[in-house]
Image 1 (cartoon, rainbow, N blue to C red):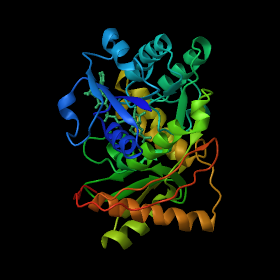
Image 2: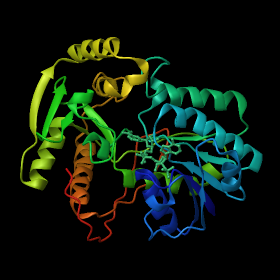
Image 3: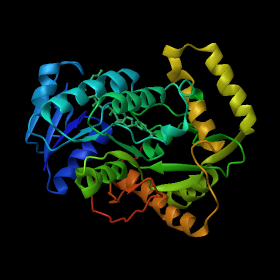
Image 4: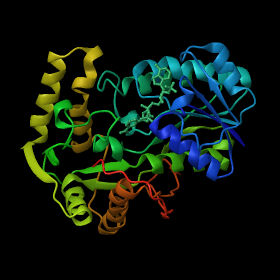
Length: 335
Ligand SMILES: NC(=O)c1ccc[n+]([C@@H]2O[C@H](COP(=O)([O-])OP(=O)(O)OC[C@H]3O[C@@H](n4cnc5c(N)ncnc54)[C@H](OP(=O)(O)O)[C@@H]3O)[C@@H](O)[C@H]2O)c1
């Protein structure tokens, strides 16, 4: 199976390429900057593009592939223009498996104009539905763990952007009770879900659809408890107010900002839609907590040792994960 990974030089893109190759797939890359790709990743070819609207490069990239996974950065122009141009190239080339750059909360639960960084997902999905014979694949993973902790090079989800974890003070500045759950997934798990998905009979059927898979589901209090046990040092917890206080803050920040400057305040809406039950409906389940807690222990260990996890995705249902460590010596002390 030959798979094209667009945005292969990115965080998720690298994991996708490694896991695809580990699964025996042949990988072609598409991107502007081949030098950013880990040279140990052996590709069939790398198609260099000048921009996301370099049509000859897009046509060359999709020629003869069995599946396309888009792993572009999550900006509005890439989510809409970039995806549509690749979708049209896929139509011309007769490719039926088109996995979008999602790995988000379930954006179907967010109405247009409610969330600036989800509006582009809603817009693309609707245009694809209205105009394309291709049925894209969308993957819902909750927050990426590396973003929840604002690791280097990722989007800022610290309190100054309305997010929840302050990486300098090692503090969760949370609204609500602190017991509300975050669905979260590591970039590695997200990539593994996606590779297993495009190889499945369901994806090959060309019906596309929305798939849910996440590494775990935890509150900030639970995460802090696991972190302290694994790292031997605490994450402090600072309550900032109620869910209603957060809603007022998010709306006030938006009123003071501009749509084009939405990155400055959108974190508050991510936090709000997580803790007000819009995206995550959680019933306390001891079994799920125990299993998921093990997943977070693994995330913290992985962040320090570079081990990997393998998992599987399910369509429109709760996640199931099976984990296996693979030895690695790479050190990463960024949390
Ligand atoms: N749920 C969450 O918490 C969460 C958080 C972050 C991301 N995500 C999702 O994950 C996806 C992938 O994120 P990521 O962090 O892996 O992305 P990333 O590393 O920031 O970017 C991926 C690649 O996009 C390409 N790119 C960036 N700007 C471009 C442009 N103007 N034109 C063409 N290509 C451009 C770059 O490749 P070249 O330089 O080689 O062109 C880059 O390596 C996002 O789209 C988003 O949907 C989810």
